[in-house]
Image (cartoon, rainbow, N blue to C red; front, top):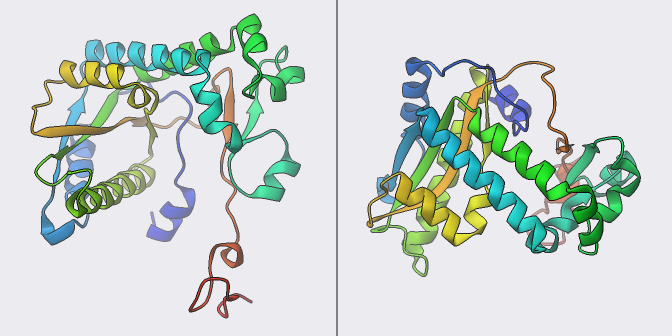
Length: 262
């Protein structure tokens, strides 16, 4: 696949993957390409854990699902992310960002805006929305053929120092590389974010994976081969919209209209 085509077609896979193991050839390719990401002074501050053990994957899926329920029930999820929710094509056209929640069970559709709000606690409880999302999260993770974990060495990842900032930039390059490679070989990937928002849950996974004290577990992704037109989760969204070049950029100084946009 052409590089520009891969960039344009790259997307988060919200759905299940094919019931098929990821080939050793593709695992080696992913790690090899990730190793070519740029890093400050070629420090290469990363290590990767590739998880194929179904028992470990299932255990992480359970933690991810429980984390989703907890985040929603205590209100953190809504407080943090409500500003990104869109409920119609008109909203998407206006903002060109956020996630369009376009797939809901029929009985929830009339209550969509109420549910996805900070004030929606009673409706969430009544319709068990947190459990629906938690079950979907657990199932998606638990049935994934592969989890890809990124660690950073604490020798470089020092949160209050420039080396920490540089190592996170390097990790971003690794993640983008992984996303483009998976796109080009018919795979998909999705960030497993919910446990990372609850320190106890994140630490539970870190201990499960025997992460040594001199490394920080930074990110976990689920990966697998994509399936066209596969059934979507009970509650799902789209996020393909992008702001125009003219909205994102200035020429020479902030606020000056770009001269490279016609």
